Length: 446
Image 1 (cartoon, rainbow, N blue to C red):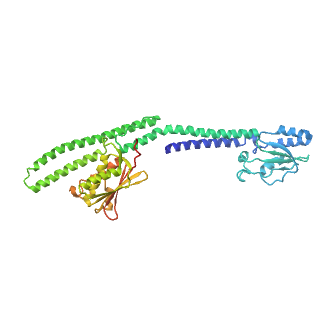
Image 2: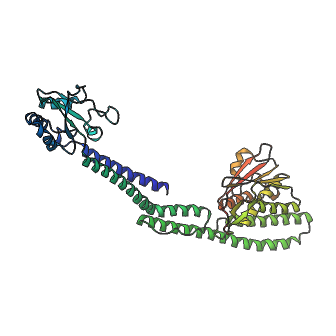
Image 3: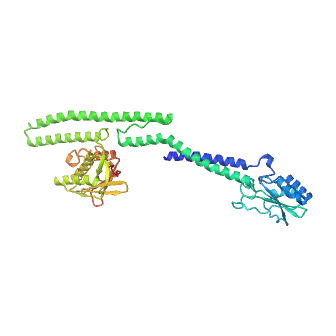
């Protein structure tokens, strides 16, 4: 369940608990007619009448009288001997009964509250927690003991009430969990759709479901997503059309360079046209990274793919080395995208250095590809600009010293499109280090 769903459940359950506590407090609060019974004891006048009746009744009827006066919230019994002395606890309650029973010894032995001594004088907690025992010394030599202990019927009722409260709370929690999950499900799907759209322009529309506000939000998001996709695709189509027309003119100019008599000027003109053609290719490729017609990703054995690419480069006599540390690990990535990423990084490394080293490692669910060279590195202040479109550290326009500044930008675009991240850093011994991180793909099915 989402964090939002858990918060909603916590808020509703907190309200339920507060309501239950308020109801419990109202139940425990003595009413106006119950002012003399804050601790579930009989009224002082009733105790006086009972004491007088017991003193004037024959011994055989005293048990019957006690049963008549017994209440569901307290019990009555006669005990022999003198009651324990008053120890000062519950002084206000003791004074009330002592005033109603003049000439008799009234005691309130120390209570044994369940939670320390903090409830000794509290009317609310006195009704809820520990019993109170009131003793009255009678003239017949016996002691009337009144204890605020609920009867078996009341105790059974309270236990059942508590059990029903627990069952009701669990049932409410289950209902809230289902209801909140259903209510927040459209929002969770919308959030997942937004994240997917960030790396996949042709991501499917989010379902239009849930409350009216959620449906309106989903419709607005789907419309916005389609407009953005149309704009990006239209931009790509315009660039492709311009590139096509430009290639036509470049081809014409190449043919005309053959009529230049000066060999040096002919060579320079051909180099300029080659640079212009490469610039168009890079610009169009960079623009297509945001379009919806990109290559489909596949499960790739990352070490096997890199080994194959390095073998081709070594056949071309490029000083490229590979140390695989993630054998058997797959990533979900387009093979064409991976080859273009590594080709750009290797070309960049060989342009500024003489050797390029590649390595792979796996940490948890992340696959890291490290590409390093032995070149001069990059000024620390310029590291943050690497990967920006048309960002070049060399102010010249000669492609042999850095191209038009789209190589690393294409790398960043391809990596981020594949849910990866790219990081640039300088090595301690010199040279540029490029770290590519991709999430490991789950095992391919059958």
